[in-house]
Length: 168
Image (cartoon, rainbow, N blue to C red; front, side, top):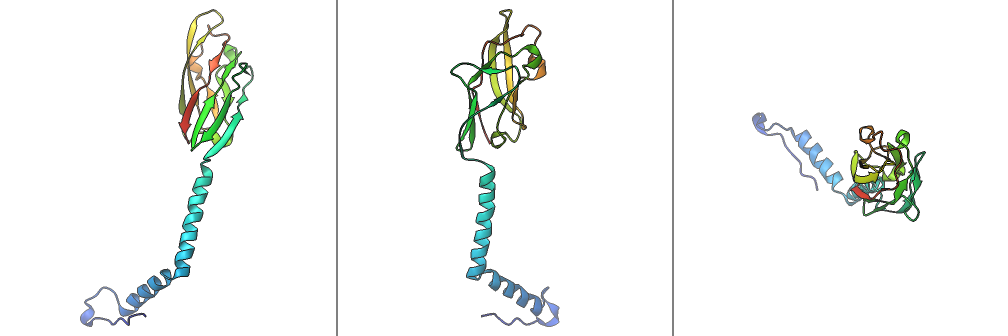
């Protein structure tokens, strides 16, 4: 039951009786079981919306390879999500210098929120000279070796392993 508030004499309170009554009525309404149920439902819907943006488990999916790249036999490039972590596996081969910067593209639901360093790979160029490749995945899902890491020596790559993981 609502208390009847009265104005204090000589305006010693910053709130009038009408304001105190309005505040009390608002609190009583907000604390009704139906209002609490609606508030909980709204909160649960917001949590579900956030959860739906971060897939928890997605099975292994073949990656789309860029022109000039092919899967190494028995090592098809794939990605999956387990407990909100993206895992990448497989190996690629066959790119020439003109096309080896872009390797593959992750599906939209597996793309990182910020650029991810995926690792280093020691690859052998056609001339037999070892070359270090630094792999990144951008927010667009493109797995690539930045342009500055390609060399005129690396005309073909015999096998480039793709093994990495990152949290969504």
